[in-house]
Image (cartoon, rainbow, N blue to C red):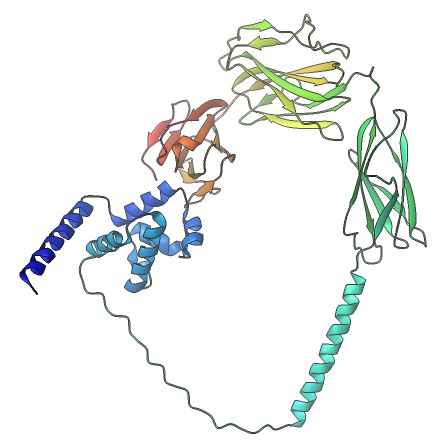
Length: 477
């Protein structure tokens, strides 16, 4: 070796020593791996699927429990692949692993020498009575299995279904039509069922010996949806496809919508949850719901001014003011108006998240011609304990939750990664603690109060919610 080579190697060794000292000043290898995975926003099970390394071995690497790993050679391979997956320098990770476990020599894996099998002398082909009988039984069993299979396929063949009237799947009938007759064909004696939206039991009719069938159904104003299927009474097999037909009976222009509110009942009290708003309407193009707080949680009235709106009469128009019009509250004391989807049978159902206090819920059904009808319900909201809603927005986030200081089963010990749009509702007696891998994408609503996200940072953070105390950032991970 030349003097120049020796000097160059000395400088390289010095640089390696400097890098080693810099790493020693930082976090331990298990902590580096855990922090890198949380920054990546994945849990152990997602990492297991991506790296093809079992989750228990990844957990052992993040906990520094190398005794759970299958030998030093496998450990180096696991560390190298996991470091590449987490965006770390694999050589630097291997060096830190060697330093933290000491410089003791790694014992070589024992090599097993497997003896070669002895070659048995080849025997000639011989036939015996037992062999011949066994072959015959095998052939008979195979033939019987084929026969059974053919019979099963034949037995399980689904019935056919054809609808000849109406000839189109969507049609409109005159406004005075109250019934319609479906006609078609299927297999002989098949049972034809016609399910109507909003009707508890379907219409049923049996096909005749030629397979023909017909059934008269009732129509109501608006959209009528029917699903038709056929069942073979001998096998119980249903037709492969369900035929769907929509028949519309126009509303009279002079008709105003009808409205019934089944929930909530007047004067109801709710705790720790959304208020279910359910009801039925007809001849309504839209249904909107507005909630106005009339009294705070501590019993103080909310300042409000009367607003324009329908009075509850079927002939009330949206722009007309009325003596008992609903109040318009200040910012934070009104929810809505919220437009609710109306099902084909005229029903609507939506949860309404409200904070503590007394509220007036206003439900308005409006027809396409502008006719409107309004009903109101007064309810009280009183929260007990902790009701926390966690929403993921903008980007995926890893979430781990403790409820009353115990791991929440939904997220588990390893946590879960949730995509944008995911909403988690958590209730507890005293406290809820949430660790998120991305604080800027995690939004909170505590006991009906929207808190937004607790930080604009994308780093992992843990927050404790224990009302009436304000949220507190903790170090639990």
